[in-house]
Length: 399
Ligand code: PLP
Image (cartoon, rainbow, N blue to C red; front, side, top):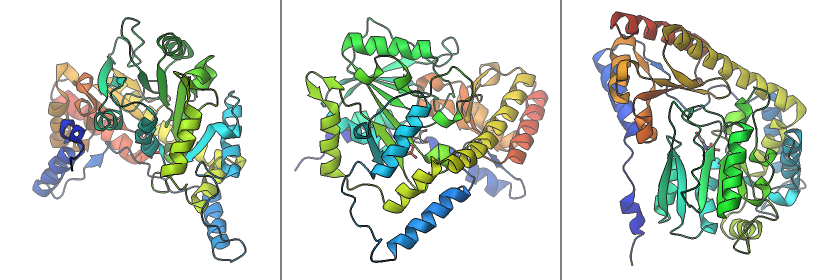
């Protein structure tokens, strides 16, 4: 027997364990100090009332013999939820059929699983910095990884380089960790690249619900031609607080072909072979999240996170610290002052301001010199943290 040797090529991720270790050591040495955590990527607000009602109604159905549900007939999800997802896309201006939507147990699973339908050894273009799962899943699959660098100059929304030929392009918009959002022109450039190079786009729209500025694309399918080259992977986690409930959706267009292979048929086959669907009660909860009441309630929760992001962004504006994100995303990606590196600034913030943010270098080498602030915490904590950080930067003469 031989193990998958690609796993030996995975880089150890020390990011969150090192953050946790440093915070624990600081707390042990300073038991009376309150540390404010601005590093969390998880939601903090409870599920909205309409979602709780749907969950309990569905649970009640499971308790009665005549309404009990076992396996769902289709691994791709109940029609009621796929219809709610196609209605959601129709509101965004994209016309999708029920057979193009696949319900998942979250975006992370499908971001990895989708590689089952892509030949091992493919050339993959991944943004740097970005959500680490893209890199690790491709390493596990034996793919070759190239990076498209995000910089202050390109607003962390890199554009295609026609001289580079790849098979698959990952795009995350709004981006984790930089909060950058692609314009329609930017996405159109990637769609043109993909069509020209016969490449597949994997578009991660996990943070779509945070886009509030008119004119910014919420889905890749707003771009003409995307249905011929793009798969979209999305989630209820951040839009509706489902990080612990687990539900997402993946769109594989009906006519998406690569070298005469139909990817919709491949993905359907893959799902029916390796997946037995998302729990009925969870699918009812997700349907409620997309109902009129659910959309209103969850939009209010997202508004709260966006207000936190505004507090953080306004504070950095007044300090003259450069950053991206925060306007249509729950993350603020701030440049460390005076050319400090990510970990040095992390240590300084922990020691002097008693605040924790995530070192940007943990999201890729292009993240060196930045830190990620999350807006998923409590509003009071955001205000206090920014006051403490401003005072610290003034005392240290860093602003
Ligand atoms: N995609 C991005 C960009 C994320 O930041 C995350 C989670 O933080 C996910 C996907 C995973 O989402 P899910 O909870 O649906 O697995």
